[in-house]
Every structure is written in structure tokens, then in C-alpha cells.
Length: 198
Image (cartoon, rainbow, N blue to C red; front, side):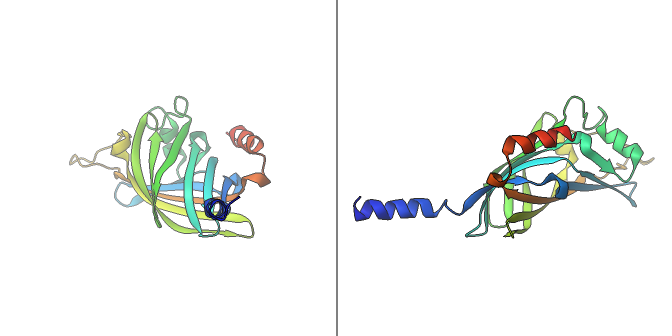
């Protein structure tokens, strides 16, 4: 091997040798959201059953890729009536659309752009990457953002007497991910456990 080939080989592998695939630890991960209604009330809810795969470069502390899905049936909320409504065919329709999916399309230093699919609607959204890092072999990520439910045809609503909307259009999102290196966990086994939790 010539010196030029050796240098090329070193440069080529150095960019990927510290990049690792991580798989989500569903017991310590969640996708939270909140939405205001009746002006002074707020629905607080979360999905506790998630699957995600993360490509993270430990050397540069850089997120390289992210994809995942949320199992709609795992929804919990501070209102049982609203929880039932959200899961019904009026809003998320958990029977027909059991998952919500996200795939990153571009990642900057503090912003993740990606395609979010809710029901049969796909929109490109932005999420802020607020905290990330690997500590003692575990990766931690916090993602935040705002969605407009009207963009995803989540159009169920109630109106005040004056005709104004009783439910805000903006949905605040806060996602916490804890993940471990994929070689530490058999992928198929973890995927199966996530599905069985539904």
C-alpha cells in the first residue's frame, strides 16, 4: 500500500469510526405534547411507547441521523375524555393509523429538519436540538418544536359563541430520548419488545 493510499484510508475511516448507531431505551424515553383550549386550559399528554434509531458521532458530539415512530395507542393525558377523543377516528384514529413516523432529512448544529407523518399527511418540520451527548455509554437527546394541527388535517374543533376557535392551532412538542449503542442490544429483540408494549 502506497503512502497516498494509506493516508486516504485513514482519512476515510476517521470520519466514521466514532459514529455509532444507537437504539432507544423506551423505558426512559417519551414524546410529550401540549395544546391550549378554552383559552385558560391546557391539555398535557405524552406517548410512552417509541422506537427510534439514532446515528451519533461521539468524537464530534454531532447528531448525524434520526428516525423513529410513536405508537399512538400508548397515549396518556391529563384528561381521560380528551384522551379518548384524540385516539378516536375524529382525530388520530388509532385503529387505522397506529403509528406516527419521523425521518430526519437535514441536521444542522441545533436544528433537525425532517418529514413527520401523522395519519396520511406528511409535512417537513423543524425541531430544536437543545441537549445532546453521550454519558457512560448512554446517549441523551432533547428535541422541542411547535406544530400546527391544521397542517396535518387534525381539524376537529369546537367554537365559542362568537365563532372563534376553542382549541389552539399550535401544538408544543417536547421529546426526550435515551438510547444505547446498537451493538449492546439485539435490534430485533428490542423492536419486538416495543411492539409488544402496544
